Length: 178
Ligand code: ZN
Image (cartoon, rainbow, N blue to C red):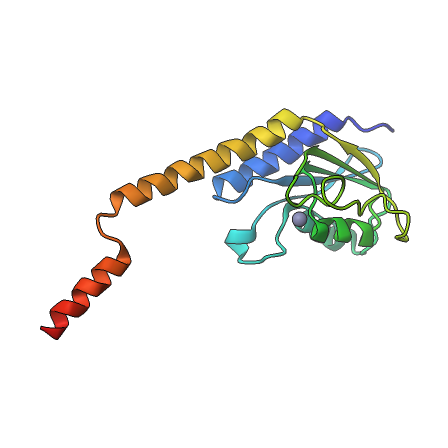
């Protein structure tokens, strides 16, 4: 069965939206079986979980391991909105996922094409089929919206703070001394 990449990337985008609403960098992932059933989903939860490894792909892989009661995820395709980082690419290789489909490239941390080439590296014991650029505009668009919103929030925060914390502390200290 040939999977409808856009259909599943839309599900990954819905996961990214959940991250956005939590104030997390909006990246979502969906793991799909050969017959088209969704095995698991995940979205970035790094801030919420206070866990450096809580990337969308890792969340989806962990949920699938639990659900299927096995570490080996052969026969599945992982859809993720943004190119996986080195940690996630390593987890994809280690879980023997057959295929990865991603939306936008991550030129600063991508480990599929941008910086490293982990998934198709013939020196490793497992190679993953890769399709890039599916719904790229929307996958990158939600990231752009998020960072724009966060910049504006930070700007507002700075404007609403009449004195910096440092200044307040200094003033308090002076008063106490007097
Ligand atoms: Zn990652």
